[in-house]
Each structure stands twice: as C-alpha cells, then as structure tokens.
Length: 389
Ligand code: SF4
Image (cartoon, rainbow, N blue to C red; front, side):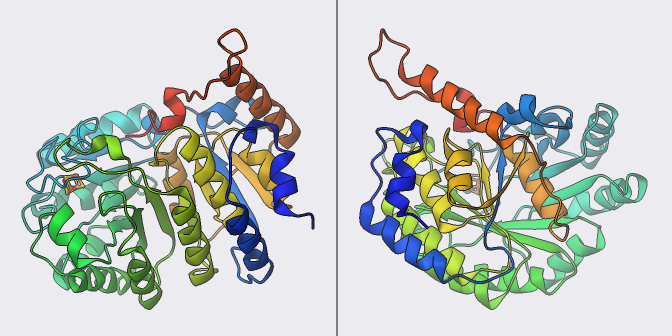
C-alpha cells in the first residue's frame, strides 16, 4: 500500500489540514499488524448522507432516539466540563408518569428507542429508583422500543435492578484518574468505584457500552490509558470514545482543546487494546480544524464508527481500503444502531460511495471558497453536534 501521507495528500477536502507525519507512519505500521474481528470496517453516521442512501431511514436520530432526563436540567455534581449543560436540551421526565407519557408520545411519532439519563446526586449516582417499574412496563408493552440508559455509578444491587427492568444497554463514563474524579467531578469516589461499576454491569446480561471522554482533565489526557486497562479487565460489548469540548467549561475552570496528535495516539492504543469489539467515535468533539485532524486519525487508527465525520473521511477510508458503510442518521441513532445490533454484520447501508465522495468534495469547496475566494475554515452547526440530544 502507498504511503499514508500520499493518500492524505490526494484527499481534496483535507487540503490545508496538517497531520503529524511521524504519527501517520506509526499508525500505518501499527495498522498493518492489527488482527481482530473488528479491524478494517468503518461506518459513518450523518444526516447529510440521507440523499445518498439507497433506502430511507425516517427522520433524524433526534426523533427516532429522543434523549430524556429524569431530573430535567438539574444535576448536583456540576462537573467542571459540563455544568449540566449536556442535560439542558433533553426532554424532562421528572416523574414515572411523565416518562410513560413521553414514551407513548414519541412512539406515536416513530421513535425506535431512547437514551435515558439524569443529573447526578453528590455521589455520581442517578436516582432511578422510582422509575424501574415504569421502565419494566415500557419494555413489556413495547418490546421493540430500545432503552439505552446512562447508569452513572452503581452497586451490584442497582446493576441487577437495571437488568431486571429490561433496559437494552447500559452506558457509563469510565474515568481512570483519581485527580480527575476529585478535581473535575468534585467527587469523593475512587477509580475503583468506576471499575467496580463496570465489573457489576458486565456481570449482568445487559449490553454494556462504556464511554471514555478524552481530555477530561481540563483538556489534558491523564487517566485515559488506565480507563482502557479497566475496560480490558471487564470486557463490554462496545466502547464509545468522545473528545471533551472546551466551550462547555466555565471561565474560572477553563479547558484547553485536547492536542489532536495525543488524541490520535490514544485512538491507536485503544484500537490495539480492543481489536474485537466495536470502537466508535461519538459526535462530541471540538469543531473546526482540530476535528478534521481528530477524524483523520480516527479513520487511520481503524475505529469502526464515526458520527458526523468531517468532509473527506469517506474518501480517506475508501483509499485506505477499508470496508465502508454509511448510515444517514445522527449520533444518537449511531449509538442505537451499533449498540443494539452489534451482533449483526449489517449495521449501516451500502450506498453509492462515489456519490458520497463527490458530495464531500462539493461541501468542502463551498466551505472554503465562500468569501470571494478567501479560504476560510467553516463548519455547519450540524457537524458540530447540533443534531444530538
Ligand atoms: S454529572 Fe453528568 S450531567 Fe452532571 S455536570 Fe457532570 S457530566 Fe454534566
């Protein structure tokens, strides 16, 4: 195969994006030595592929996979990187009755599943107690309706209650640094509490999909590799990587944008550590040039799914001889699609890849020649995650 630098140089939408030559050649060597069930496959998720799909998926993931919060926008923890802003756009379902009504309403307009979450108490637990019976009722009444639940920290008893109420998948953030837990999360819990949570969840029948938030320590990478080791000890069904977005943070505890080369290096290590399970890049990551760099490294490292890829990524993956599929949906359905159907080989759609690549090139052309030929780097709201709840 050609040198990857030459391949990148031939991808027109990546014009002007400076990738790290040493990391690229290291990734190329690394990738050649990888073996595992998941190596070589990549699925791209974005609503802009819709026009290019051979069959339609109805609606954006927002209506197909609504996100609901049992505490509305309230969260006791007020972590430095989020300050509960993640919860704000979600549907508030503060009582079991409200959840039941909201689910019925959403199923009526075609929802296939939901992401269920809520703000934390001071111990990083989401207090679902009152909701388990109604979740069981939802699953008994609408067995096809999938429920992905953000668990936060649990003990064995709570893990079993989550399993008993019938949820389809359990998601949690795995944090591998005590300093990050204490300083960013303001939490008196230990790294071991996070590992135990993972251990308890994977001991149930639930599909477990932990997340690693890269750059969680004020934009620096600190506990990410330890989180990876924790995951290796308690193997889940899939892992989602996201990159911290500095603009959620408050001014007095600012975050820097994570260094894309370090993020790329972590992708490579994560792929090597987990060659047999789907490894996905969720839609949360910083916008602009750094996103193009991060996405390129994600494709090169061999991640299996990218939500809202930067223009040029489908072309890059094709030129790297990957098995490419695309799904015309936003990342909430990406998570649903991959996580709920991970055993099947038919996630995503075969589309006319040539047309998608031509579309990526046109998009890029529009983005860079808007001001009388002055080159600017722009990003639509859609591609910075505006679609995701
Ligand atoms: S616990 Fe979750 S919702 Fe609450 S502030 Fe932290 S990251 Fe945001």
